[in-house]
Length: 113
Image (cartoon, rainbow, N blue to C red):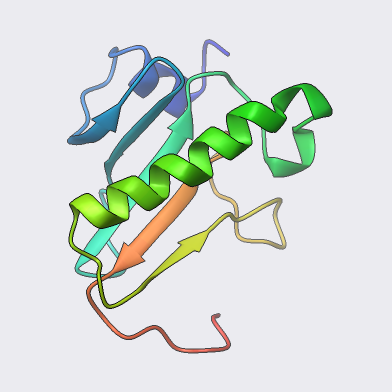
């Protein structure tokens, strides 16, 4: 999508503080961190949200989960971390491009929000 900010970040049109990148995903530091460690992982393929994912996206979604685990290890989140996927307006999704939040280095409360 030409007007999607995360698509522009994935293409390198907008700079980001990259943590990890491969041919399918990009992980970068959140500009408004909600924890001492707060990074976003996005697929390079545009998907509006998790609700927009189809069976053909199963390998991509699996790849994202496995890579977010690897990023957590690299960021030394040995004491635990939280992975969040906000979906839709009521779910708190602010950018209409599927993304995972990885938060760590502080105790997380429950229930969130």
